[in-house]
Length: 326
Ligand code: TYM
Image (cartoon, rainbow, N blue to C red; front, side, top):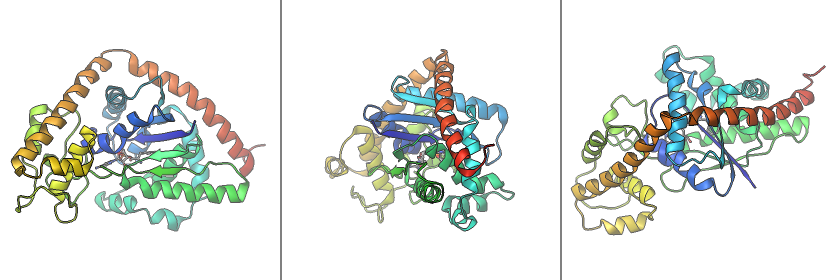
């Protein structure tokens, strides 16, 4: 069985973009692949975090994975920081990455402009991500489009390492969802929907109040020609709403477009709000039940034991090849 691996940062609440771009895919893939899914809490500290909140968010994220339908019997679920080998391998990979190629990462360019005193960790972040992936011989890495460049860098580093030291790493492939790869901000539909947006009116959080969610969708920015058509370039707001509807109902975009071709924007928004609110309500109920049980700890303990065993083998192999053993 091919192995699939992905992670999410617990750096804030989970948005509808994360749900569609990442978690929903994992639920579909769990029957087809040996799936590894983890909380990237070490990536989160590349920017400032409150320790108490960070801990709480990591736990909440696992509860949310489970509430969204990620089955702990079918997936290996773990906390990145529970396994010291991620940081171990990351260092070796950093030493096999050129400064220039890391400097080309667009996420680093964006984020380093937003933070006045940004950390070195923000720069070396992609090599930690490469370690996350290469430690477990992942075949596929499902991510949103914003992470594709990091997976490509991972491939380059792995190929370079294999050429220099002999076959060690599997070369992973990114999987980008063809639909919903980029859910955009409801207030500025040319921008990605993000938990760190200044104006949260454009961002839907999975744990948001249901009425507030409905209001956000009803006040989504659209355009003035009152024609429901999928055209991301010229009609980004309407196209975003069609995408959200399509992904959450498992309908093709062209069928959604057809369904609403005679509808006005208000009707379209009401329908999108209905599916989003129904989806979120069901997730929120399960989430509360899980947080009130011991399930999160049980799942993470199991994941920790399994991933440490696998990662230890890989890091020993790498250390041996690089000459870091006695
Ligand atoms: P993160 O936490 O920023 O986002 C988690 C996943 O959600 C996708 N995503 C989106 N997809 C569609 N529309 C959006 N608006 C949107 N926003 C986010 C992201 O592409 C991502 O797939 N570096 C990663 C975490 C990570 C990781 C890894 C992922 C660490 N190591 C190894 C895969 C493999 C990150 O910060 O994702």
